Length: 145
Image (cartoon, rainbow, N blue to C red; front, top):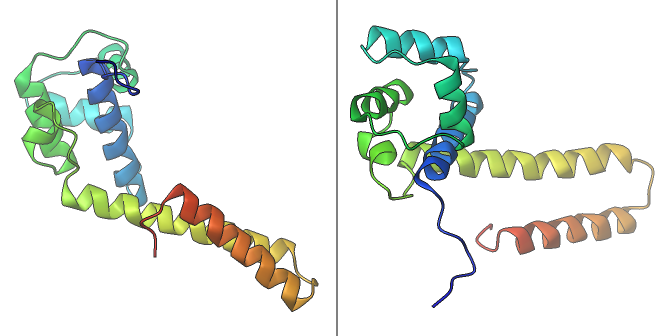
């Protein structure tokens, strides 16, 4: 039986999770750099090279088998260790909430941008454009209110 979605490699799944955590941290106002991660891992006793961090974030390197490193990364990002160690894709509640907030913020940016650019159009036209934007956003995320 074939599947439409390929199964991500262990490295690819970890890369996705790490990048989600980095995006979430940025949404919370924390811009995390490699130096931040390297320092935290060094203090925790699991040194991390720039090359290995790159491979982990891109999913192009070998699977990370050092559980202590994954545990320390989970602590650094403030998530349960199982999120990085286990193969499951369930997002921690805080991360999921931040991603939902980001999606809403992006949708509002689209609306605000359109409103600024379309100043001077008749109200009926603006309402039609708003409805088109809302329809498109609903197609992209049917669970959006």
